[in-house]
Image (tube, rainbow, N blue to C red; front, side):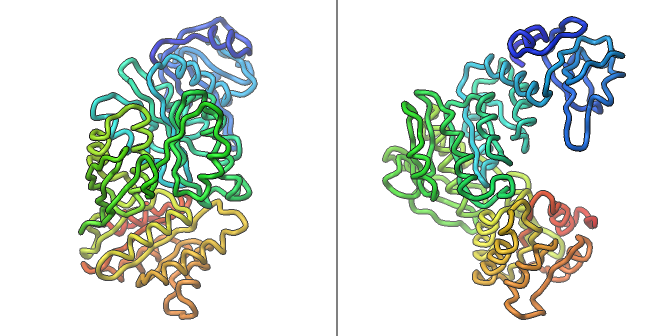
Length: 459
């Protein structure tokens, strides 16, 4: 935190009740396994846990408590509220209000973490950014980023995720961004929204939350660009990025080098700046354009934007190419998956030399169209000439059948990791590239680790 807060400040601003007086704090903890004697403990409640069950014995281990029900056995100062998750966000809001630098927020169906890391690389050249750590991009994670703000930070870069229709609006209400972007909209987390149109509407809250004078960076190549243009608040500036020359920031002369990384000319207000990314795949050009737009809207010179983009190395679990067992090339893209990101991975894999194998874990949260969407990626893998598709999970059956197109010998669907890993391992040699991808729930990082020789995986 930039400055210490007190329970009295929180109660005066947001209501609730103070028990056993007040206390000042400058750190927050929410895990009883990671207590901090100089922190305020927030007792969160979830579907399968309730931290109130453990707070009675926290005397002398933390400075105070935020609770939904009083803990009589505890003498610590307590702020009693109706919802401790909301209270966590309210503390985050006070931390955000202490910060006076520019705030950028990015959302999207896929690629938003890569955009965040690109922005971090750009700003880190001459600034000290505070950046969302890992995937802490929801109503619990985003406040943690706000708590991490310090006097040394001069820019705040937030990644915002959503599983429901009001999530982005809530995150914007506490993050209060001044420059925002939607990377793309694709079928992802459909179960929480009902349709892709509903996803677009929900993501659009990152634009409709903006105040007069703020900037909305629009991906002009996304199918929902017109939808967002028509719902932009009055007084909000727009900056369009894309592949068309009409965009203020666009890319020209895109080509993949021998490593599969994109080289292109980044054109900003008519001036070209050559960029060679260290990230695999042509789809990362779009990620770079979104990052460039957000950085440019925040006052970063074009030459530094190009330099920062070129300087970013790989992002863990996202198209990381390494030498695996038997000399094979293993591309670890296991961090997450939806049909759009799997399509981009297939396109990348199709351009590799030698034999090409896709190992795909089930894509989660796709709603009633889940089976059809798995069939579509299986058909795309066949169309793009991949040599084999190995799938893990019940939905993978649909992908495997679409890929095999009636040829039983081409069907490689598994329900457990160990036999999948063994089967794929038998296919590898130094002329083969295997790409591993899947939703978080599929734990495909264990498959990638095994194929890299770091682990035998687990069931």
